[in-house]
Length: 251
Image (cartoon, rainbow, N blue to C red; front, side):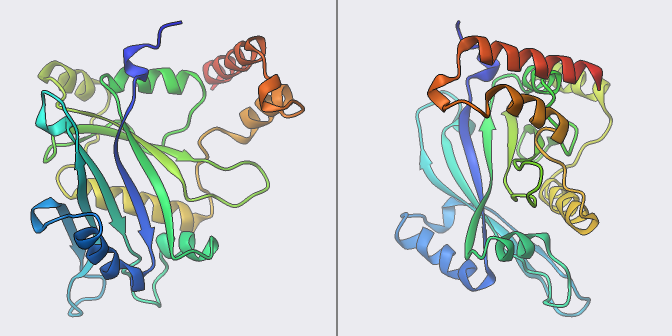
């Protein structure tokens, strides 16, 4: 069966969480080992956590490569680096993710680019996928995006890993359609800060949204968990997809 165009993903960027001690060293490594120049810094965002203490760097993104595409905006490969810049006395979901994995660095999310985000979003929602935001517009980068729940399963703590799905250069017609679907949008640097705040609220509440609900996970596991991966048949896959569609429809 031919893959629908909206499921023909390309990697747009990835987000790497690092401990503060690694943050500046990571910048130097990108400059020296990966061959990046100051012109390859896509953005760098800051925040003053304590009044009068001065700004702290939250994140920077590096362009690490270029491909071949008619549109320059679709040629680049980027890595965003995020540190827990909050004071030690302040809670930080990034610090909790890193410390929970006993890690100096942890890949948080991968952003997959699609040619039709609204079609993919409808497809994924119909299959029971959870998203922690509506489809959002970042006007500064001419992009629309949505963020999924985290990949983990019942009985284990949240993994800290999720997906972003995005579409660059949306048409005026698409933006109008999106505006009719929901009125919520984040603009400019509020996109990153908005996502950061949403993850912080999840981790402080102890209620982290999973990629799929526990109930749906259990239904899918009942079909395939007793088999080796290579024993999963096409009938099993179709059965699982129907389970997803039934679950999504019932929500």
